[in-house]
Image (cartoon, rainbow, N blue to C red):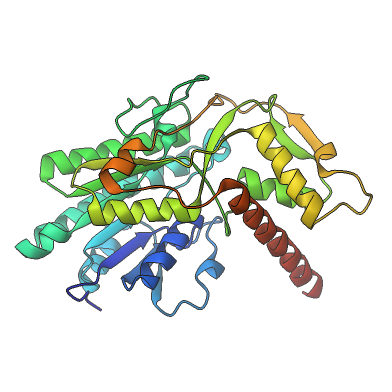
Length: 344
């Protein structure tokens, strides 16, 4: 259905994924009309949108330009938010092809469909239209022990994943400057929260711990990441849509830098409390250093002053509380799945 005067009609690509589903639920709860387009790859979790009658889910690929165009027109879309992406660095190193297809050609397809739709809009509707590209701080490369990325940092991607995202960002910028498409690009640090696919660090360590497996940490564990709770990231994207300017770039940080080893130990402390080992040993005793990732970036961190100044963005969740809630959620999910498997 078309949007009312005070309601956005949003196409959320990758909306059955971890961050995309969190955004879709937030926007729908705010009263926006939400259409999710998702290819339902291995990382999609349709249960993340279970029971949401206010969200329409379409199975399809962002590389299908005609499908995207049909959705834009049929639902009178005035905001496109592109979360769709292959995102796991290890997979991009082993099998880069799908990253090139989705992250580059998929965005190219989305831009073409969005531009054609935008050019057909009335003057008033065109003023309201936005294409939002969800990028990553990894496009900026690797930091040393000091310094932080900003939205204006030079691009210096180091992995097939970050290179594919950087290429997409450049296409988005080109479609804005060349064709006038009103785009916004956002960057963020490492996300965590419920429904994250277990190949990512936090849920992976929880799954390994509950399976009595070694808890793998790359190299010597000194690589540093800044962590942002998924709902804080979603809030930043909403602010960018509401207050951002066409062509704008906004970077959201969490202010929660941790080495991978320090984070693993924090997770183990939580697990010792909520899911103690049957043998009485501490979960940290299972931490094992494994061969480092190829081209492993040393450190990521974002200076959030720009987003605070321009959008009024500030993270709302305390890291320690959000991390515990996240670990508890993933523990419950693992146990629920174990019961389901046993009963199958």
